Image (cartoon, rainbow, N blue to C red):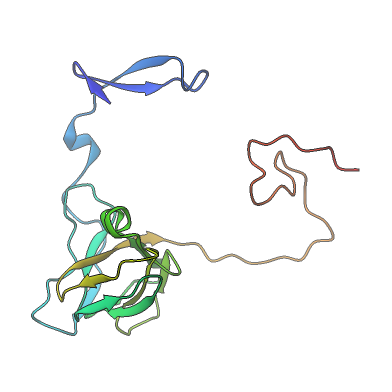
Length: 185
């Protein structure tokens, strides 16, 4: 939250009860407009827009629907985007839902985020899920339906072990963060 040229942020010590001022950042320090990476793009439908970042500093480039679709309540539909890419080795693209579609219509992506590997050369298609229990969702050709985030990825060498080193979290899994649990016996 900006107030009087300063940015207010909760204190790590008392996140809800105490605020501290941080200096405001210049917009040029936050975002650059020049891309850092070249990605080869094949448009499978020349009448559709190329993926584009809506604002400087955005992480995701917009992908649009290549066809009109109607997604029934609690239904899913795979939607083509008309886009194929060639990523450099060491990168992957991740398809994320659009927050506005999620908020307004309950629309999300089944396997969010969807992964596009560097070696994949086919059309990016997105399986959308309508979580609304009553209303269908209609999308028109050219509607923005997802965001494509490109990231550097590491390849791991998996090494078998007899046991893993200890950690603060241990084996606590789903729903274990922030709960009190009985000590392991």
